[in-house]
Amino acid sequence: MRVSDDDALRDVLGLNSIAVVGCSTTAGKAAHEIPAYLQRHGYRIHPVNPYADTVLGEPAVDSLEEVEAAIDLVNVFRPSEEVAGIVDETLARHDADGDIEAIWLQLGITDDEALVDAEAAGLTTVQDRCMKVEHQRLMAD
Image (cartoon, rainbow, N blue to C red):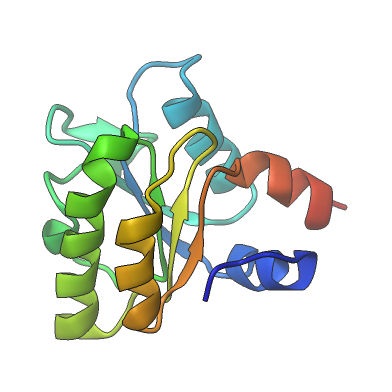
């Protein structure tokens, strides 16, 4: 299901365990600041970054497959042209573990075709939206 209304966004924002693909070690970059914001608001962040050992005080892994914890949501901070591969990796994990419920492509990141595959597998999808902005708009007190 492609998210198109605030109630559906709230449902996705209610998921707690987030694998952040492309999570950055560089303060000031959106791929660092947004996961840091989410972490401060109680989300469990699992950084996926093959070039880092830790991000935001959490161990970083090379791929979704290597995240040892259950994942509710995959949040993507990679270029649009990499989305199809990330969706394939997400679906492989979803098929094996059944733990991923949604994929969120950050602001400026889109791939309609790849998200159709995710939706066909039963995942909820969000694209071209900022998770921090939507959290502040819909969930923050």
